[in-house]
Image (cartoon, rainbow, N blue to C red; front, side, top):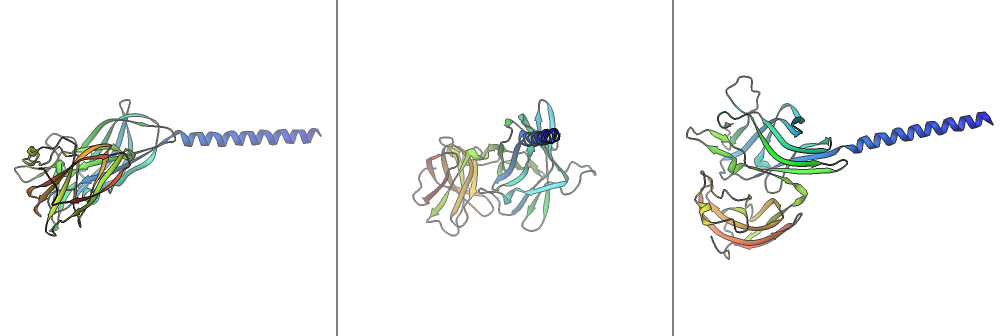
Length: 299
């Protein structure tokens, strides 16, 4: 009887130990949060450009003045931003992260700075004729860009973010015909955004139309003249009309005006076809509109 009691006691102790061990593992696994970070783009005006290749070497987040690497690439990672527009995005981070509040995200870039130590490929622009030209940064600028925005990662939860890089506003051409990368971007909570898209009626086959989304009331005719060489600079995002359809994506909840703009194939401004005003959007909405290009008003 004593031996049987001792065996039962021993078995109970072993099972209790295993139970505690498994519970401990479960707690440890659930202690971290998951960070998903994707990148998307607004289209470039000129059809002559085939790709805008942003090449990354590292992505870090900052917590209490300490940088922690999220993803260090063995080889520079190139992303053609033009391939991820109209609601498409590319996941560049998808991993477990220690929970906490972070103040900044830093993206290290592979760009030309005259050093022989820079590895290929370099961030570059690719043209439809097969030629490429490297992108440069403004003088005395570190090969990186930093987003200052407080984000909180909670234990056992997913934080899904989207980085919207507006290429049209981010690439400037200087007097030496060099392309300078000055990033213009938004960092968004993906699940708190929605899309406004739809079909355009009575659009001529030869018409090339770009749709610019503005916060309602923020658009005025002065936007067509250009600020710092960029037309429609205060737009939130844009979309090229393809086969009569468009999608202005990753918009936060609010009320928007859509500006329909006609351009030449080389991206030169022709004129504003009209404005569709006061479109109400909620998070996760996927609005589909029918817009008659001949019935639009205002410019």
